[in-house]
Amino acid sequence: MAFAFEKLLVYQKAVDFADQICSRTEQFPRGYGFLVDQVNRASLSIAANIAEGNGRFTKPDRRNFFGIARGSVQECVPLLELALRRNLLTPTDHEALKSQLEEIARMLSGLIKALSAGAASYVSKRRIAQDLCDAVSNVLDIATDQRTQVSALHRQIRWETEFVVENDMKLVMGMAGHLMQGLRGMGICETAEEVRIGVALAEALMNAYFHGNLEVPSSMREDSHDDFHALANQRSKQAPYRDRRIRVSTRFSRTHAFFSIRDDGNGFDTSKLPDPTDALALAKPHGRGLFLMRSFMDEVRFNDRGNVVTMVKRASSPQS
Image (cartoon, rainbow, N blue to C red; front, side, top):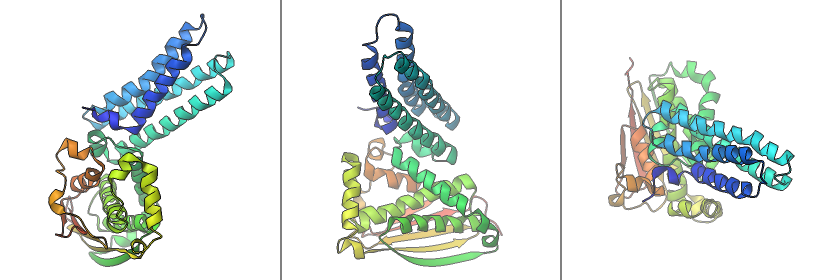
């Protein structure tokens, strides 16, 4: 049985990096034992701190260990530079290893940013991968861009809208940003909670886009991320998939927000929904979105056909 952190892409890349460092330094000549020892310790520290951090229960602890892992990434940089200058590494090997460090550093920054933004509940429990880091980052960018419109929105007491969205990922994510704007204007939640709701909305909209209208199975993402998106891109240009739409209905008030997202796909058997409390189910791609939606919304329910999801978020402190 695999540990939770073993599913993390950044952990897997960190272990690969440490393994390559071990192989390269085996060839270092005598007299460089100090360098061999330090660079091996630093490279292994990256994966070790990711593993330990993922097992911690509080956000500060997880952030701390991921930060230590990122520090170990930076520690490796001057060690590899010295190895290059002493002709212990070829320029090609040095460039390849440094490129891996840069990628690991970016992924760790994404994890830390996700924890700080409020996605910690999912990060710690269910092997967050790079796509979730990117999703949270996109949601944060959307939120920041809309700050100047908050004042006018605060004057609303009720807002009800309906949208019909084409199968276009930019439009889908733009819809998530627009719905977050409604949340902000009604003062239903604080900024950190707003980000979590934004993640839940993005997951619901992407489920409607990928799995509903384009009928791309979530299992493909686990087998091959590239094949998953290649099939989605292909179907977005083919009938009948390209002609399908996503229909979004919303109602906002000072006490709650209501979201209904309908796709034109064939739906699914709702009796086979994964148990969101089952750790094994949450490890599978088809359990991730539902877990996030149920974690960040107060109510989540599907129609019998399985092509409509309804979500409700109540205000933490109802306003008059």
